[in-house]
Image 1 (cartoon, rainbow, N blue to C red):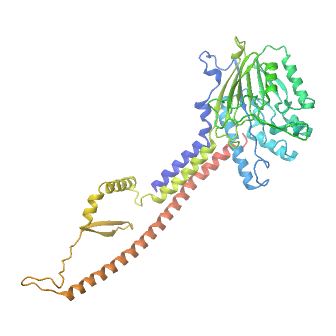
Image 2 (image 1 turned 90 degrees about the vertical axis):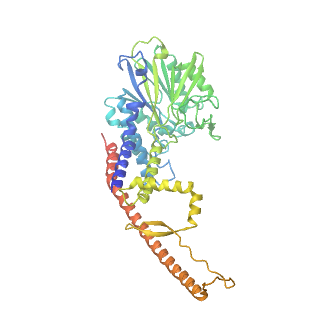
Image 3 (image 1 turned 120 degrees about the vertical axis):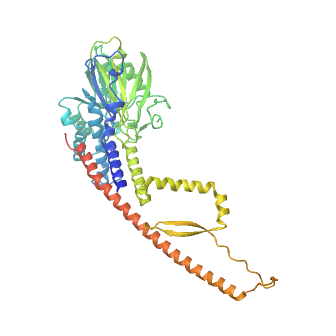
Length: 510
């Protein structure tokens, strides 16, 4: 009973950490606003606009996995993926009290391919996960378009209604917004490398050229869903967990070389963007993993931060978000206008692996734990020491065993014990040709008969002991199985309500 209580409490502590406390760790210990990390910053956050950057939630839908739409398996995957992001946003991001939440694109996994009904359903989930109906009352929310929202050129050029559907909900794809004393220039990266005569591509480059001619003297941050070009095998810094992916650009052979897929903006377009926009910083997504590179422009080095996905189901074991501080007062140096800090979220895959390991350990413990709990760990340690001692004294024991025999003893709990006794040495019998001294006698027939009788008795004794051993072992095995089942049921009855409470505490609207 004491063991079951201990395991129940241990499971409860693990559930409290994995389902609740792990999401509080970023705001409590591991992350903070970058301007607060500067020694000279003693005036708090009043001189800065605080921006939380999130990218690539890619809500799973019928296009994500080879599962039937509305199937139970798909619903379960969607629920736990959505639950993780909702917890991450409510418990890890919002406690920082950002002034602005910036999404860098890819909101739905199959956004450009979903029907209007499916798209509206995914939109409802998106708003629920990030609590948009509530936070938009006090927090400014900015949206950037991604390839999973409107598709690449080969797709959106054929389906302009997809662009219209996106802009109707999330707003313009190319825009400038001023936060504090920093201009944020957002571009539709999916159309930058399109056909020059295409309407979408030409509109994007007209916006870029117009932004470059703006007379504003504020420092600029370039926002692009697709990262800018970098040479193959360019290192991504210490925060990347997956291998480097080199540039890939695929074009349709039958559609005037329109782009079907690309993971980086092309080199020519990258150089034009850096020269025209002249940013102090570039923020991007799309890659799902963290990456920091430095580009060389005509005016000097420019740092680009590719933010990792916020979802644990998008190929990154270490989901993340970024905190950005934009200066809200006069600055002495343009490079001090904006600063960033990458923050990591709980590793959900590791948490589930730990749950499975803990379940396996629980089964082993309840099956093998000693029957008498008053001797629990002591008996276990004594047994281990005896085994070690037996190996170290194996030679001595072997010699002693030649003159000893063991007797099986059973206690009230059905446990077998071996009692060592000195072996009785049988008299040595002489053969018939041996000459005996005076007064000796030979009883050949009686000896043979007595010996045969002893053998029969020994055989019977062995068979009886073997039968008793088998029955006791079977009885002990059944008893241990029943005890394990009872312990597991008790642990589950104690912890399942706690787990359900923790799940729905975060899932319900707030």
